[in-house]
Image 1 (cartoon, helix red, strand yellow):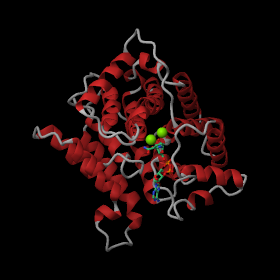
Image 2 (cartoon, helix red, strand yellow):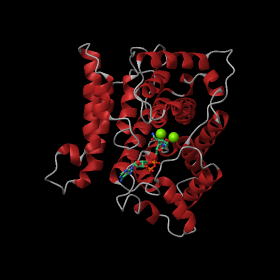
Image 3 (cartoon, rainbow, N blue to C red):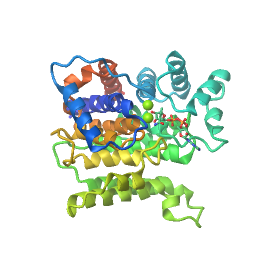
Length: 354
Ligand code: 8NA
Ligand code: MG
Ligand code: MG
C-alpha cells in the first residue's frame, strides 16, 4: 500500500523533528516531577490546540544532521560518504549553535582541515582512538531506514558506513544499527493490527544477537558485556511485562537505572524503543488518546537526553503509525516542519522510482 507507506515516511521524518523540538527545552533535566509532568501535559495540550500563537520551537543537531542525511540520499539516490560528510560539515559551520555534541565538532574541524581527502580517520581518532559511543549516529539514521525500506542487509551495511563518519566505537555503531532496524521494522508493519511488544522485541533480539556476535573472542566477559544491546532489549521486555501484568508499574528510577537516559547510544537507543513500545498502552500522568504523542511525551518525562530520546522514539512511532498521528497544529510550532514533510515526500519518490 503505497499511500500508507508515504504516510509512514512523513510520520517518521516528522517524528524525528517533533521529538527534537519538543524535547530540547528539557535536555539534561532530572526526570520530571509530578508537578512538572502536569506542566508538560498542559504545554502539549496548548500546542495541539487551535487558538494558541507561540514562538516556533527550534530544532537541534539531531534534526540538522538528519536533514543532511535525507538531502544527500535524495540528491545522490544512495549513500555517498563524500557528499554526506561535506553536508554535515557545511551545515555545522552555517549554524554551529544547534547544540552539537562536545566531541563531534573535532571531527568536523578535522574533515574541513584535510579538505575531505580522508573521511574516516577523524572519527577513528575520537576519544583517544576509542571512537565515539555517543547517540549521534542513531539520532540521524531515520532516512537510511526509510531509504532501505525492506532490504535488511543494505540497511545494516549503509548504517554502519554512514555512522562511521563520526562514530566508530562499536556501541555507537551498533546503537545506530538497532535504531535503524527498529524504524525499518515499524515501517513494514500494519498500524491497524495490534503490535505485540514481545514479538517485536524477540525479532530485535535475534538480529542484535547476530550483529553483536562478532565480539565473542572476549570469552571471559559476561553476556551483558559481550552483547549489551541484546541484554538491554531483554530488560525492556521484562519492564513492559511487569507494567502490564502484575499491576506493578516499574518506578522511573528503576527504568532509568536499567536503561539510562544519557548521550551514549547504549543508554538511549533502548530507552527510545522502550518509550515507543510502552506508549501503546496508557501511562499514568499522560492524558492523550494518541500513542505517538504519548511516546514522545513519555520520553521527555524521563529527563536526561530528552531531545534525542524523544526524537528517536518519534522516528520509530512515526514509521509505525504514520503522519495521521501527528497533530497538525503542533507542526505549526515546530521549525522546518513543512520542509521535513517535503523531504520525506522526495525521499519516497526516490525510493519508489529506484
Ligand atoms: P559526541 O560524539 O560528541 O558524543 C557525545 C558525548 O558522549 C561526548 O561529548 C562524550 O561526553 C560522550 N562520549 C562519546 N564517546 C565517548 C567515549 N569513547 N569515551 C567517553 N565519552 C564518550 O556527539 P554525538 O553526536 O554522539 O552526540 C549527540 C548528542 O549531543 C545528542 O544528545 C545531541 O542532542 C547533542 N547534545 C546533547 C546534550 C546532552 O548533554 N544531553 C547537550 C547538547 C547536545
Ligand atoms: Mg540535540
Ligand atoms: Mg540530545
